[in-house]
Image (cartoon, rainbow, N blue to C red; front, side):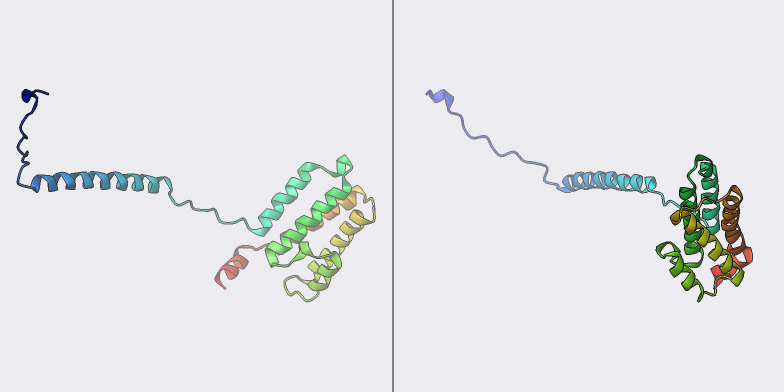
Length: 179
């Protein structure tokens, strides 16, 4: 090792004694980071605009749609009478559940007709129509009764008449919504 290889210590380096520049730089960096995150938050909020849900369909409209879908399947022409009556009775039962809050789909026909005796929601005419309709549906579904084309059409019309006669119309709807 040579004496020329050894060098003296360098003197300390002095920064600007005024620390205002450092504060301004730090504030600018914090502002930039804050603006970046604020922009991302705003952008995500704009993507997630509140979706306005359509009002639920009235019970009678659901039943009409189901009846038309059943008719379009044309099950009787395919010899699927039992399936046709199964779906037809379910449409009527679910309509009654949606419209009058009756637990029709969960009960047997006898249980349902018994509970219907205490109900004030349906008139005697509608109760009789429903009794005849559900009895015919049960005979076809469980007793292997083969209804005629006229009986099949009458059953469809009975279900449709039940919906027609008991649906909520404008005046009834206002009463339901108000009180």
